[in-house]
Image (cartoon, rainbow over all chains, first blue to last red; front, side, top):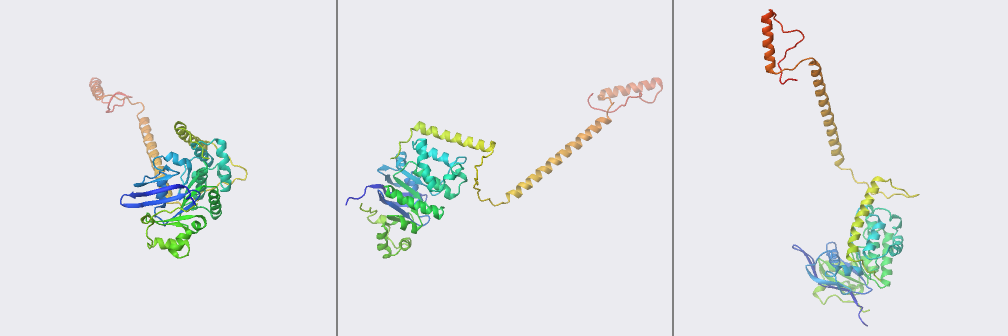
Length: 261
Length: 132
């Protein structure tokens, strides 16, 4: 079988803040149509990695490409194919949800009709349709997250990067979001998300990587991780096995295996 | 299929347009009353805890009011006093020191001439500064 084409390719990515090494020599590949979960405890470097992929942070060393486009040199081109949901979305004050959607749509070159056509079903599904005339700055954290998700999906990207997508969402919307992620994956989109909620990763992802102290400590399908690290146990056991320091970092081994299509 | 993004000039134009939209929203929020839809319940944010700032503000307000009242009272009392003094001085003629001395000399001269010991009637002599 031919291997699935790579969408995300990270090579030797590192980020250092003064004397603190946030991400160290990260090597990772994500194939098309895959749902990849980046797991790790707080402060492991998940958000830093995602911010580097989005060009928000400049890496100290290494490279990353999405669909063959360099994330750092061709940021605008990269963003055409990527939808990004930040961990803590921030919106301008005195702007309504509808106006924010329009601005994002305008920046992606969408017509007014296309913006309304694409955003309406998403807003309805995420139960945000009755709040479009409210100022987004007054939204709760969950509502901001839902609006940011609509903005991220407006241009119909092929690759989605979701940073802690379900944090701040109520259980109903969390379930809706997980269903949506499965639908998008079924439609051929690639999803890369970070989380520390292991049950969600277990339900959702095809492959997972465990980041610990800035190093990719383990990567593989859930079955691979279970058989290797906890002898058929749960992902939670795998996580504790890795974060207890018993596992050799993945970047020191041959690295990021990609499943066969 | 992802759409083609706008050109640089067009993209740059969107930013001031967004700024204008925010300014209009801010202005309309201040000037126009908010129209409520039928059956609409506005989402209210969780009220913030009242800290020491309210007490400090109340203290500053009280101090400011007291200062304003005190300054007003002082101003009015001084104005009243000045008005009273002015009323008392009505009819008095202010002369210079030189003029006063000349008048005194003239009065003495008149007294010597006529054998009078008093200054002329109706004229109150007083040491003063400049001529009024």
